[in-house]
Image 1 (cartoon, helix red, strand yellow):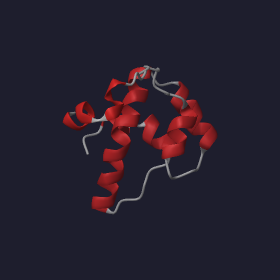
Image 2 (image 1 turned 180 degrees about the vertical axis):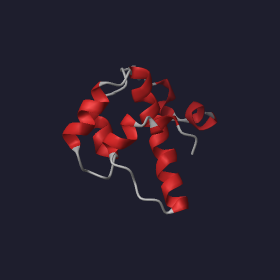
Image 3 (image 1 turned 60 degrees about the vertical axis):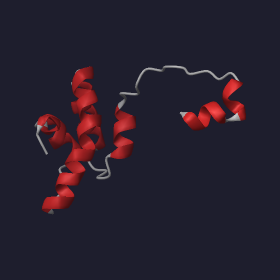
Image 4 (image 1 turned 45 degrees about the vertical axis):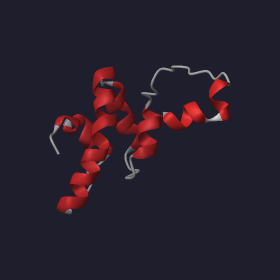
Length: 90
């Protein structure tokens, strides 16, 4: 913050805009690195509430870290969604 105040660009105007989060299946599919059973995964995704979709985005990294630590195989996305494994504590 102190750097910004001293900066010559501080007095220039800028705009901050807020956009809704992208909770689409395609956005999540991009970060899921096991690309199998896409159609079934999308059907399971469409059944989720927005709250559950947010949980999937928030817990995906924790799940990935858990797999790295334990050496377990990654579940297919459709399985992970149908079993609501995004609610697990990793």
